[in-house]
Length: 536
Image (tube, rainbow, N blue to C red; front, side, top):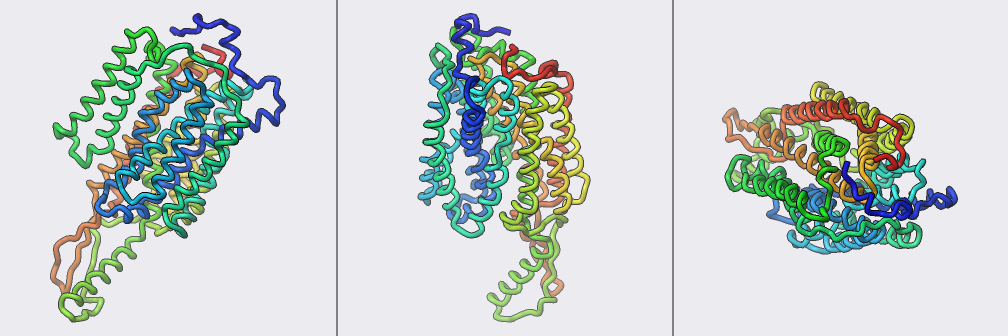
């Protein structure tokens, strides 16, 4: 594997500011601050994604494009992560940590105060830099933590100490159910403002610097290619997958990515070593991340949406009452309730009618705790036996959970039990991926490599959301109303979807996870105990 290690003095290369002589209290305090700060991105996603229904009325006319509040966050975050990762290698990880935090605060303040959709999206773009804090956190941990602690620390960072996974759903549910959605962004801004001085005073800066200029052309090609491809994936259903104007986004994106590879092979200081990128140690991890993240996107969206959907009987009663009220308004005549008959086509079996807070407490909370625990477990296992076997177990669980969701009744009990099992794999997966990459790449390539992991995971989530959205819209719901025995034109119910659309999405989850599992099974990397990045 080609590296630039030989260009660095060995002592300088190993001197990253590691806290080998520090007390355990000092080491764990630094780790705690890094982990808490890196929880900003997952915490906002947990809260904002579930609050879209409450945010939408403040921006009339946006309609289904309200999803861009989430899409643009992942889009910009994925495109910016490799560049920010490289900047952290060159300019300093702590410095970029603080810059990302400051941009996040500015974005939150904009979103908390604006009623303009364009300004709101710009605020979300600024917040998206928080996605890169996870990339930077992995690098800081590799540079600062004692070697023996790195696998466990990476596992804890990947799944969090609980602020995002436990407090996030409850806090988000409370704020959305009891206050304006704008309170979400004020609280996120306040949390980040409280963390910035802790990072400044407690976390030391890594001494590792890559003595090279940032390849601006390569960064622009990579970020632009990823962004255009993600736009096609996210909007293909709305615009028409096969329309020439839609395909143009995909073609342009792929062209830029191909050009990125060509250019990077020719420049003297590439943003990423192409030989390293396509080495099996790295390529198999990135490909597995793309495939596995499809399930993360589909499951996280589908379960929350189904659990918060009212039962079919409630929807039918609402349509009946609305029809009776409309007839009385038009004719002045009040019909008896039995004069109106309503059926849903195709009908659905799910629907608990939970508020966001109820969903958080009854379903999401247990899964979040399990995710956090098994992220730490995977880190410990990686230190003892390597990260590949825990990853295999995680992907086996992913495949089994996808099949279970597709076959079992879509009830709250199913969501609770299967999601809890899925969360075991979720925690192990998120812990193993950065460990495998940290073990695979030299120190001076860690930022950009982990940035590429962020791109693949964001791409996978986006593809998963696009797939399930397409299936759902092909299984849309309509109300069939009959008044006095006379059928009326079918009335579309745009926020409701048939069971079949969700089940197809879960089958895609299972298939993608099986493919990711096959890659993990042939992976030669990660079969020995993790060393904290000493093996290249």
